Image (cartoon, helix red, strand yellow):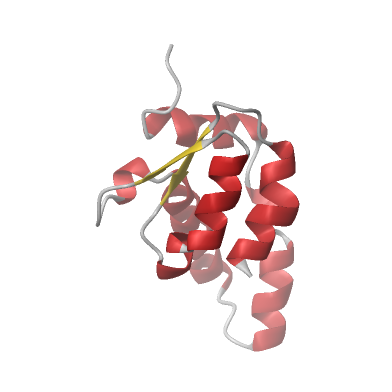
Length: 107
């Protein structure tokens, strides 16, 4: 699924010279995905192992997990409904702040 995402969704949006930063999830080490990014003229780098402070998605997951605990979603239906609210949890400014806190934004 990751390779298909890279080939069909990510690569068409990337400009040559773009740097894609990946965590060390095993599926992210796909040779086909790496080739697709290289063929698009992009670089890809892996985060050091165990570095959640450099991974903006970990900051967002932390807020999501706190939200799920706060509302007490325990059944599949409750979790599905809670996850459907995810887009309302994060403002564009907050997402920008996650990238800034991880060191990907200057200024």
